[in-house]
Amino acid sequence: MSKNIKTWYESLFENYARRYDEESFTKGTLGECDFIEKELNHNKSLKVLDIGCGTGRHSIELTKRGYQVTGIDLSESQINRANEKAREENLQIDFLVHDARSLPFKNDFDVAIMLCEGGFPLMETDEMNFEILKSAARALKMNGKFIFTTLNGLFPVFHSVEKFHQSTNEEDDAVYHSNTFDFMTFRDHNITEATDDDGNKKVLECNERYYVHSEITWLLKSLDFKKIDIFGARLGEFSREHKLTTKDFEMLVIAER
Image 1 (cartoon, rainbow, N blue to C red):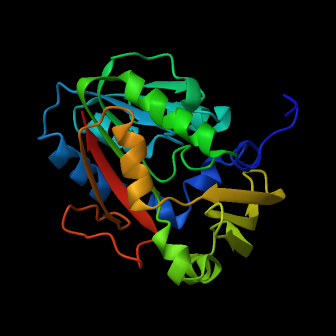
Image 2: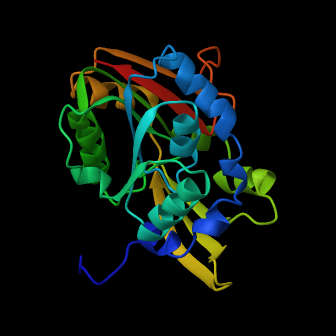
Image 3: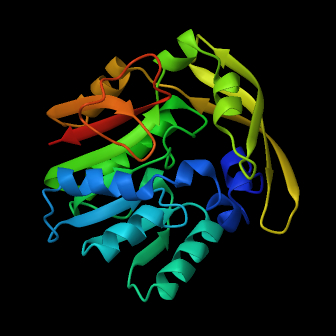
């Protein structure tokens, strides 16, 4: 692929930071951070890496609660907005532009979080998605914990992805339509329409990889994670009490070395 040709996710998140913050799926930050804190036993000495941090909503909230967080994202626009928001809150946070497949960290963090499809599973191939998991694992210390959400492959087997988006979308959200789920690759192909921060409309051909429980478990075991727990992910209400079902659009993964 030519370096001059942007992928759909690069195009989508270019000049889309303020509109991103208005998306309905960004409204669960407080509850999600409550869950993360519980998983960390409220130990504020732990260093946290936020992969695919977007405009920094989880990084900023965790920093306000006393944690040391580094946020990375591929989108310069998203990172610029994250830095702007941190300055408005008088917070010192390292927000850096990096490709999640090749992070410059090794054994540096106690915890990695990757929420709301923070890179994984947006990549063009399974191998590229796996590079993100490898990179996150490499960034963690020996006893590190990895908390992330990803698309639940059980959902589109039983339900329409397009109807799900129609039922959950609010006025300022991006619109997803013409969804076609490929049962051979577990990829959903769709047309995404979004309006950027300058009011320009974008129409993009997108596709995302859905994963089933056993795939995620196997991928993480191959990266030497010993304990892997997977639950249903509910917006703003992450919990170990929510058993993963076919009705959950996303899964919540908690992996420990």
